[in-house]
Image (tube, rainbow, N blue to C red; front, side, top):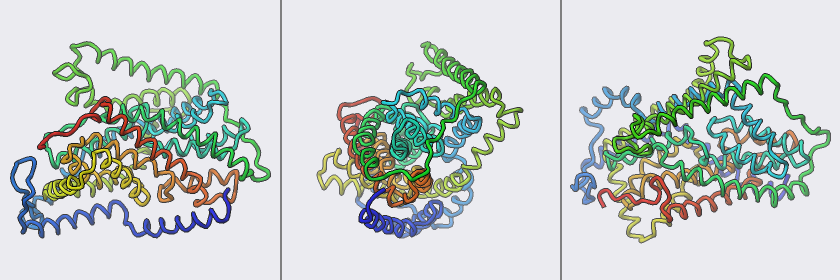
Length: 512
């Protein structure tokens, strides 16, 4: 797929990435280590005095020693509640229960196949990218359904199958944090952002959909740049330099049976009916879903508080209907088994959340976060850089860290605990900081072999060109990564500059 020189250069880059990445502990152990480090640092810094002023009290910052007998006793007695009260835990698990039903019933897979099969040939690339972006709603469905299916579709219409795989991979993974449809990633990241922001301002509340308008509008430039690169740059190069292996037969598209079609139609109508019902009870001015001030999008509005339960309901209803009508579900126990399977995949996240909750609680209670935020903000202020430059620097930092630490939630829990309050001190809203994080995290997913699904994409390519390797795929996806990083960052700055909705155009003014 590439020359020996290209492979040699990419192999050296890959070796370097693997050496650094292999030195990082498991994210759970990383949070445990950081918690212990916070304890030790709190004991050291508690003996010092600082002239940094706490914006919450207007007094000098005082570090709390977490290694005193009283503090350790408090740690042990509150450990369970610290974990169970950790906001991201409930958000993710509840959403995944619903998504699991829709995914294991086959409803999501059928929806994706239908969207791809009805698309005219000249619009296959943007359709693949769009479906890849939307597939984030179903967590990993894009990696196991959209990416290989895109290769099949491209080959079936006479195009290079690896071009389809690359376009889908760029949409699914490179455009991970963009979506027309609100998904579990929205309230998940918001909960981490709010927890970090509250270390500086305990009263601050963020909307669970604080980035949704930006994420939705981002899909258009993302689709455009991937479409252009695939059709005008990458596929012509593939056709010239990367012939398919001999004996590879054009695959046959799996047909959707009559019963599956009927089940999908009824399930889709059931889903629309549920959405229509929620809309109908939300629109009246007297709706109980409205906030006391009459707003639906205000954080205090019950509708906003119910975002995650609604995600659960909107996936359970069509999933159950489709499953029963298509014969996947024969009794109620089968639905529960789907939820159980979804939870099996969340075991590692639950362990991570346990240690993450303890770290964030220790970091917040020690007031080290406040000290770092104030000192860091003072340093950035002394540089005199515009806020836009600071955001760009943050995006590049996140993109670099993402090469070695793949988990989006783990990275934001770690980085956000410092960056969010520090940027708040500079007048940058937590919403904008979170949006910047989403760009850096997404755009480099497609060039890091430490991303769990990266080797799987290599296997998809090897179905058509056997000598495709990890380094080969990195080299192929690098133009996508750089283009996404550039275009997406530019769009954030434009979006923020013109004061678009839900907070990104507003400054944070608390304590300024």
